[in-house]
Image (cartoon, rainbow, N blue to C red; front, side, top):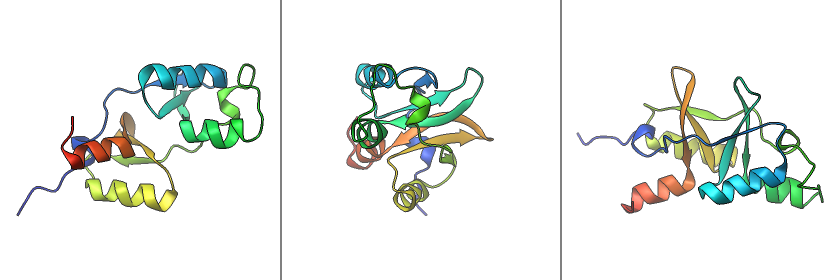
Length: 129
Protein backbone atom coordinates (compact mmCIF):
# COMPACT_ATOMS: atom_id res chain seq x y z
CA UNK A 1 0.00 0.00 0.00
CA UNK A 2 1.44 3.36 -0.96
CA UNK A 3 1.90 6.18 1.50
CA UNK A 4 -0.94 8.67 1.56
CA UNK A 5 0.43 12.24 1.62
CA UNK A 6 -0.44 14.11 4.79
CA UNK A 7 -1.08 17.82 5.33
CA UNK A 8 2.23 18.04 7.24
CA UNK A 9 4.09 16.91 4.09
CA UNK A 10 2.98 19.99 2.20
CA UNK A 11 2.33 22.83 4.67
CA UNK A 12 4.49 25.89 5.33
CA UNK A 13 5.79 25.83 8.88
CA UNK A 14 6.54 29.54 8.92
CA UNK A 15 3.53 31.38 10.31
CA UNK A 16 3.22 35.04 9.36
CA UNK A 17 0.88 37.15 11.46
CA UNK A 18 -0.38 40.68 12.03
CA UNK A 19 -2.18 42.38 14.91
CA UNK A 20 -5.90 42.94 14.48
CA UNK A 21 -5.51 46.71 14.99
CA UNK A 22 -2.83 47.04 12.27
CA UNK A 23 -3.94 48.80 9.09
CA UNK A 24 -4.89 47.12 5.84
CA UNK A 25 -1.93 48.91 4.25
CA UNK A 26 0.43 47.22 6.73
CA UNK A 27 -1.19 43.87 5.91
CA UNK A 28 -0.67 44.46 2.20
CA UNK A 29 2.97 45.34 2.76
CA UNK A 30 3.58 42.20 4.80
CA UNK A 31 1.89 39.99 2.21
CA UNK A 32 4.16 41.52 -0.42
CA UNK A 33 7.33 41.36 1.70
CA UNK A 34 6.85 37.73 2.69
CA UNK A 35 5.46 36.72 -0.73
CA UNK A 36 2.49 34.99 0.89
CA UNK A 37 -1.24 35.14 0.31
CA UNK A 38 -2.38 35.19 3.93
CA UNK A 39 -1.53 36.37 7.42
CA UNK A 40 -2.98 35.03 10.64
CA UNK A 41 -4.51 37.82 12.71
CA UNK A 42 -3.73 37.97 16.42
CA UNK A 43 -4.97 39.99 19.37
CA UNK A 44 -1.61 39.86 21.13
CA UNK A 45 -2.37 36.54 22.82
CA UNK A 46 -3.99 34.25 20.28
CA UNK A 47 -4.98 33.97 16.66
CA UNK A 48 -8.46 35.39 16.05
CA UNK A 49 -8.77 35.38 12.25
CA UNK A 50 -6.98 35.34 8.92
CA UNK A 51 -6.57 38.04 6.30
CA UNK A 52 -5.84 37.07 2.72
CA UNK A 53 -5.02 38.84 -0.51
CA UNK A 54 -8.58 37.96 -1.55
CA UNK A 55 -9.99 39.64 1.58
CA UNK A 56 -8.06 42.79 0.70
CA UNK A 57 -9.33 42.90 -2.86
CA UNK A 58 -12.92 41.74 -2.32
CA UNK A 59 -13.63 43.51 0.94
CA UNK A 60 -11.31 46.51 1.24
CA UNK A 61 -10.80 47.61 -2.36
CA UNK A 62 -14.31 46.73 -3.55
CA UNK A 63 -15.88 48.65 -0.66
CA UNK A 64 -13.55 51.63 -1.03
CA UNK A 65 -12.13 51.33 2.48
CA UNK A 66 -9.13 53.54 3.31
CA UNK A 67 -6.20 51.12 3.73
CA UNK A 68 -4.17 53.68 5.69
CA UNK A 69 -6.72 53.89 8.51
CA UNK A 70 -8.90 50.78 8.31
CA UNK A 71 -7.88 48.05 10.80
CA UNK A 72 -7.32 44.47 9.71
CA UNK A 73 -10.13 43.29 12.01
CA UNK A 74 -12.68 44.91 9.67
CA UNK A 75 -11.69 42.71 6.72
CA UNK A 76 -10.34 39.53 8.28
CA UNK A 77 -12.11 36.22 7.88
CA UNK A 78 -13.21 34.34 10.98
CA UNK A 79 -13.34 31.80 12.36
CA UNK A 80 -10.03 30.38 11.19
CA UNK A 81 -10.67 27.23 9.16
CA UNK A 82 -8.14 24.57 10.11
CA UNK A 83 -7.13 20.98 9.55
CA UNK A 84 -4.96 18.64 11.63
CA UNK A 85 -1.43 18.03 10.32
CA UNK A 86 -1.89 14.24 10.22
CA UNK A 87 -4.96 14.38 7.95
CA UNK A 88 -4.66 13.14 4.36
CA UNK A 89 -3.79 15.95 1.95
CA UNK A 90 -6.85 15.12 -0.13
CA UNK A 91 -9.02 16.07 2.88
CA UNK A 92 -7.44 19.53 2.86
CA UNK A 93 -8.25 19.91 -0.83
CA UNK A 94 -11.86 18.89 -0.19
CA UNK A 95 -12.15 21.30 2.76
CA UNK A 96 -10.75 24.20 0.72
CA UNK A 97 -13.17 23.42 -2.09
CA UNK A 98 -16.21 23.10 0.17
CA UNK A 99 -15.43 26.35 2.02
CA UNK A 100 -14.30 28.26 -1.09
CA UNK A 101 -10.97 29.19 0.47
CA UNK A 102 -7.31 29.01 -0.55
CA UNK A 103 -5.59 28.97 2.87
CA UNK A 104 -5.97 26.64 5.84
CA UNK A 105 -4.40 26.84 9.27
CA UNK A 106 -2.70 23.56 10.13
CA UNK A 107 -3.07 22.36 13.70
CA UNK A 108 -1.50 19.78 15.95
CA UNK A 109 -3.45 19.10 19.13
CA UNK A 110 -5.53 22.25 18.47
CA UNK A 111 -2.44 24.49 18.23
CA UNK A 112 -1.69 26.20 14.92
CA UNK A 113 1.67 24.95 13.62
CA UNK A 114 1.56 26.04 9.98
CA UNK A 115 -0.39 27.19 6.95
CA UNK A 116 -1.44 25.25 3.89
CA UNK A 117 -2.18 27.21 0.72
CA UNK A 118 -3.27 26.31 -2.77
CA UNK A 119 0.24 27.35 -3.87
CA UNK A 120 1.72 24.80 -1.45
CA UNK A 121 -0.53 22.13 -2.95
CA UNK A 122 0.48 23.02 -6.51
CA UNK A 123 4.18 22.96 -5.58
CA UNK A 124 3.79 19.62 -3.83
CA UNK A 125 1.85 17.89 -6.58
CA UNK A 126 4.03 19.30 -9.37
CA UNK A 127 7.25 18.36 -7.58
CA UNK A 128 8.56 21.94 -7.72
CA UNK A 129 10.42 23.29 -4.73
